[in-house]
Length: 85
Length: 85
Length: 149
Length: 149
Image (tube, rainbow over all chains, first blue to last red; front, side, top):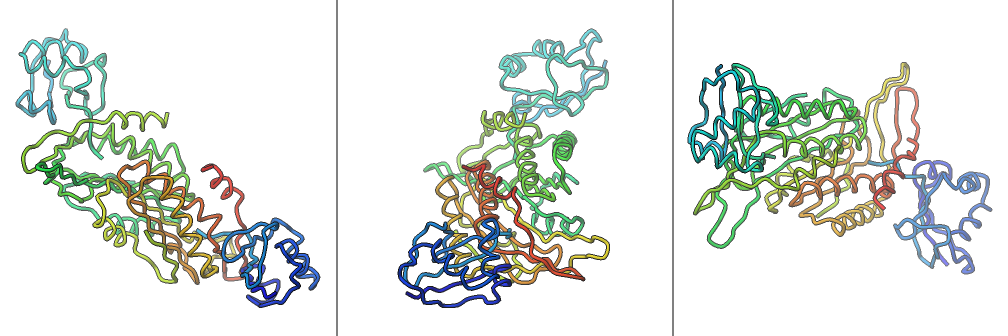
């Protein structure tokens, strides 16, 4: 199934791209499983996801937890803790 | 001794003047004693001072209690509870 | 810091912008109070008349300002309060507080209007198309002030 | 009620004056957050760059606005937040809340900025004359939000 990925701020700088579309097996059902898949891509992915305090997630533009379900064509985003305002 | 008196809002309307200077015996030492003296002036004075919730006082432009001392040439003011802001 | 007691309208944003230039503040919090309209059938508010105690008013506002400056770390405080005849919808009072941090600016601005409501000698008279009467003081205003103790 | 995410400067007072005409409010409370200057010897802030997540930002701000409107009796809420390059001293975020009563306006405005600080996807990068780096999130911002529970 197809998933759109967005990266922001430090996370964007570490992975080196701001967005991509990936095609994953449909046995990836949660954000946690997607993260496990992404960590296999290399050390910069591990660097982001091994420190749980360093990133936040959103599914379809709403803040999400690792246990949240993902579906085909979802928009998933990874970014650092928020510093606006 | 001479005392300047100021009246505001409803109090001013009831007594019918906005300010006056009076000359009182120097045995009047507190606001409470001044009020007792003023009540002898007539029913409109009694009307103001018999309802403790209906008026506030100031000596030399600072909020005051009935027990506060007064001195010659003080500026004493009587007015209703505040409704600004 | 300054207090202003005046008949004229005030422009809180141009005040805010000018004061901002003097400070390296992270936040400002502003309060404006307005003449609220009412229309009870025959009785329709036409204007508000604000009486005050010249001299004591300024002293009371300066005192409130000092209390706030001593209680919180603030960069600046500006208070303006009008008197005389005010039309429906017009601003009555304006307060701007600058601080490094937002919580202090919120608390100080709220504190100032709560104290102003009970300690600054202003009295409101409502003038409708049929009558005029003095506005009653509200018990809640004393309670709002006392919560800062 | 409305939210605005924009690069341009905003004028909170003209916004306030226009919204005031639509409501019979007794009070408005406004918040502005600014780019704070710093000058640590060789390291001097030149500008702030704000990244955001288009689409999610607006949804997050609308959600915060709804939470406030459901929690208090408010006449109106306006939120504006900038992104892109901001100079020292410039406003970053503006919030105006109108209500019949002052306490509700204060609480709602304070609530909105506390939630915005942790839930609206903006990220600040400080650019000095020597380097640039992402601003760290503050633990106190989570605590400030949690006090509303």
